[in-house]
Structure formats: C-alpha cells, structure tokens
Length: 127
Image (cartoon, rainbow, N blue to C red):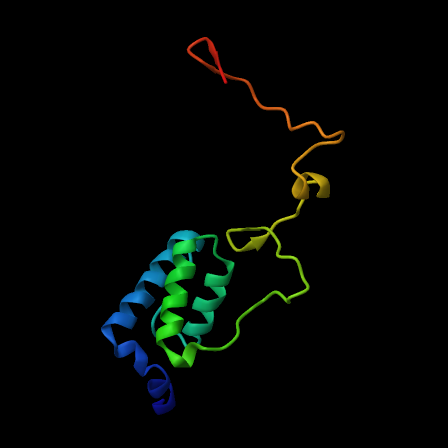
C-alpha cells in the first residue's frame, strides 16, 4: 500500500490534479468511460484513451501532463514506424473502404476533378 501511495504522490499537486481531472472529463465525454483516481493503472488508461482519442484537446492535455510528471515518461505508442495509421472512430479502428487512388490523389480516373454537389438556396443555384 505504501508503494502505491509513493507512486501517485504527484496527484497531490493541485496543477497536475487539474490536468488529470480535465483528461478524465474529456475521456468521459468522448468514450463514456468514467475513470477514478483510485484505479491502479490510471496513468496507463489515460495514455491509452489519449492515443485512441480524436480530440486534439485531450491529446494536448495528456502531453502537458506527461511533460510535467517524470513517472509518466514511458513509450505508449501503439503503431510501429512502418505501419500506416488506421482511421479511428471513438477509439475503434474502422475499415477503409475508399479506393487508394481517391485517398492519395484526390482525383478520379482520367484526371477529372471530383464532381461537386449542386447547392440550391431559396430556389437559386449557388456556386
């Protein structure tokens, strides 16, 4: 019990605790998971959810917290350097059904730009 308290003594700092609460709120709003301060692997869970998040605010908050606490300086990267990052939605990898040419080039077939949708506002064609 004493070792757990000594490992989490950084949570007694009010500025760091504020960042942890902000991360917890952002994780709860995005993933619906409520993390508690007394959980044994709180740091690992914060890192996992920050890496899965689509929220730039959560990632920045986690990076700020990690920079201020030396105990959190482990490598939690889940993708190797050679692997392409997958598209994520709410922490889950989604299938990439777009063709490779549309993803990379942005153009279709014979060099034609993609067709734009016609916008009508109050009976008038716009753009």
